[in-house]
Amino acid sequence: MSARAPLTLAVPPWSLAVTAMLSVQLGSALSVGLIDAVGPAGTAWLRLSMGAIVFLILARPPLRSLRRPDVPAILFLGIATGVMTVSFLAAIERIPLGTAVAIEFLGPLTVAAARSRTARALTWPGLALLGVVLLTEPWQGAVDFVGIGFAAIAGAGWGGYILLTQHAGNRFTGIQSLSMTIPIAAVTAAIVGIPQASGHLSLGVFVAAAGLALLLPVIPFALEMLALRRMTATSFGTLMAVEPAIGLLLGLLVLSQLPSVVQIVGILLVVLAGAASQRGGRRNIIIHDDLVSETGLA
Image 1 (cartoon, rainbow, N blue to C red):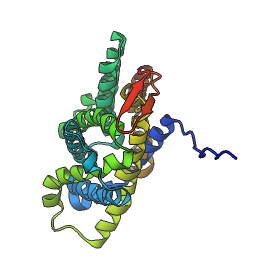
Image 2: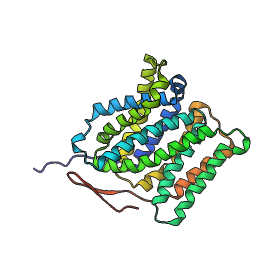
Image 3: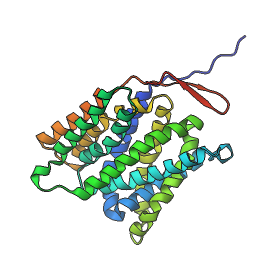
């Protein structure tokens, strides 16, 4: 009698990415209270530290499997994650959640356009930028350039995160990779986060940070790592077009941040830019003992 093949659940990679986006934006919206208590860098440090503990419990870092070319990617992925988290939380302290997400989204959209084989794809970041202008409404005279700057830094970090995560996901399982990169991200955030949170820590703060760490980084980063193992950076980056709309919706529902009609149009332009640049890009990956080869890239 032949052995039965193990039952596997074929989950579309895009569903993993969308679930991750929902978790990220809910975690961001719910972090506002913690930001008021310990500051954005303090919040990032606490969340990433709690997340690092979870990942270290779930998986032992595969340090013996590290090759010399892997070290820079793992190190810079951790640093990019830390910078991205601190900068984004600093942004939402000053500007609406939906606006911050839209500005941050310029990072992965630019990555998607730069990796595209068509010159037409380069127009989509421009369309998204127009949407961001409508979101920030500079003609109103109350533009928070510091908040916009933090969101732009987060966008650069997000673009680097996508590229580096795909490399790390090719070499290690999702949880193994995160067990190495999230502690590095926590240390990166600690440089500013510990001084900012000092004197404001309490049991309630640690409990809140632990709960928020599940929403971000534990659940979304694990799901994104799994998604990026089965998608191109282009398709993943452009799928993120939905995230500004999710941020706008949760900003309204959780934070009562009511957008104007012009800002809604701006969000729609950002989403349209991402959707228009979307390319079918499921990765056909063949996994061997210690290497990953890929075919059929978009």
